[in-house]
Image (cartoon, one colour):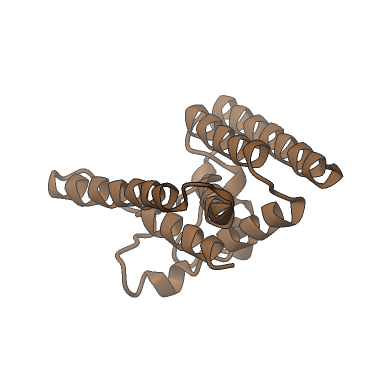
Length: 173
């Protein structure tokens, strides 16, 4: 019981920090792209990219996802920390050898959320449906990227690669 309360408190504090950073960056017109993960990103950018978001709505949706996972499933502080480390250590330089990833940085808490989604996959009653839905959502990201690039929309950083990596890494831990 205490373990779950600590995890919930950690998620609430993390949400408060992310939302505060989002509001401050929005009103001060701070360029969050400097803290995004991309090819050749610094260690500081890797450690901080989860806390920065492209918009207030982006931050709100990612925080809602984090809170939904932590409050619904049996998640500990150590799992949240492990999910953060999975997201922070995404091998973008290696993956960019196989998949086109431009120098445009990406930001957000979603990689951490996808790692947690993979970690709690065994706690779900309908495991097959749950995992099919997650894979379908990631596949939807692939389709958006592919069809967007066909119509000339610049989809520079395929976040679906990061999401898939974090989900699978969390699933197999």
